[in-house]
Length: 327
Image (cartoon, rainbow, N blue to C red; front, side, top):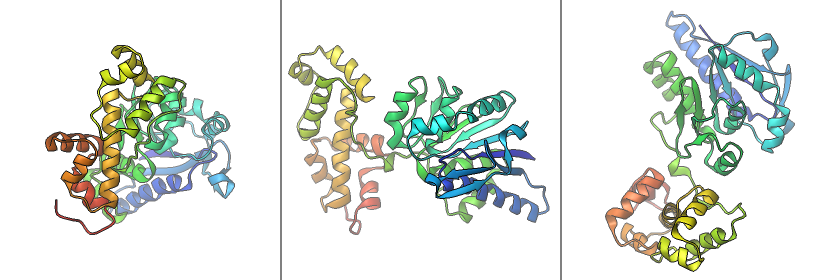
């Protein structure tokens, strides 16, 4: 039987504490009902016996304080909500315990922005990590030594797991169920909890907002120019000349400031405009393609799928407010 410690940090999001508990408890019920032993011993653990969560609206009573848990097999770090620096500060006593348990062989899984807590332990240094796409900029700024993979739903780094944003943590819990109990049980849970089990990317849900929270004014001006003229053909050399920078210097500074290359930024601005058209208009695929500055249908489809994880038709049919239209 694996001992699972669902950590309850202060300011935890209640759903990402209770959700894993429900699924793992359901696995136990399924197996014991079939005459097999329960695979998990699930406990809520924390620094205190009573922990305020969700801005103090609720109190979670833990099964054990972390100083009483000498050995565990899996730690689940839920999402948190609020000012992240304050959250990390009030939960700093949890970090050495996570590290010591991992050193003794425990796996650790963070859910959504629980990745900030896991990264604060130093265990993710040099490793891949997923989190909510809306928190990507802050995460990169705070943890530049962690390889953030913004589009992923799940990362698995030899016993360190992370999940993408919001309810995609359910996919990580099912992944852990499959790994430790078996695919048939994970599929049953996917059906029981109505979870889209095969989802691997959060790209279809991402909204590109640009990244202007930096001090490089010429780069910020270049970003604005791209966003205001995305229908036109914009080249890196054109921008370099416009802002009196060498091409190499522009590309280096642009990547540092925005976490995107110039070409990636241009593509993402164009695709974001295309997404909005597909969501709200009755234009066909070619009309949208031309409106955002593409003339090559194959290139447009390839870039669109690369950015969103869906084809233009799939995206339009999934998110258009009207009935799906023929291409």
